[in-house]
Amino acid sequence: MKNQRLWGPRDRVGQLYILQSGWACTVRRTEDGERQVIDLLLPGEIIGLREFTFMRHVTEASLITRGMIQPFPHEDLVDLIAASTPLAIALFATISRQEALLTERMLVTLHRSARSQVLHFMIETFFRLEKLQRVDLALFEFPVSQRLLGQILGLSPVHINRTLKALEQDRVLKKHRAHIEVYDPARLIQEAAFDAEYMSDALNGLKARLAQLQAPRALPAGLNRSGS
Image 1 (cartoon, rainbow, N blue to C red):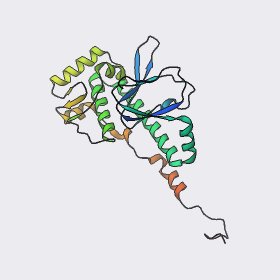
Image 2 (cartoon, rainbow, N blue to C red):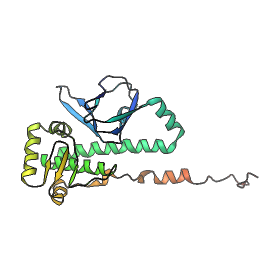
Image 3 (tube, rainbow, N blue to C red):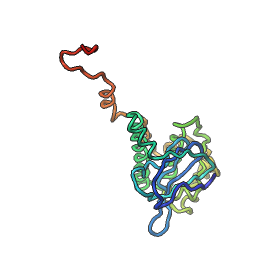
């Protein structure tokens, strides 16, 4: 159900969740009580990988829309990793991509205007959705409230509201309650200065090692393939 809580700060870490449908987020509270969204999770993604090795959670996690989740106990995951090198590599790749998203958001937040931040995040979300399902940039799902968008980007609700109004008045896009309507895709991409390289699914950094693992092992001198 919407707003279903998956865990809270200091709860014991015991399982991951596969988000079968719906959207979710993880949140960290600052010392003054402000909420900072760490991860926005989309259908098909795994919730809880960042704190997989912790004893207790430092974040809280909940659904932001109606959806379905599949709990996955850590014990089962450890057994699968031990038995499957490809699965272990896939999990490492997922964690790396989550870190790349967070790093890119931090850089955009530090060096871009509020307008550019909003546009960049919307395009990033579109490309993430495109990896999971067929979507159209002219009209795509985005059930993120203005308040939550501000908590993701570190901007005040007032600032978010003004930015969205300006984007609508300039005929770039309009944010509806649960989706984005894009009037001018070319301008959206140009203003966001979006480079999707950090979102690549390629495993270029592992190709050489994977090739070594998959290559037939050389036999000791004097032995042939039949073992004679």
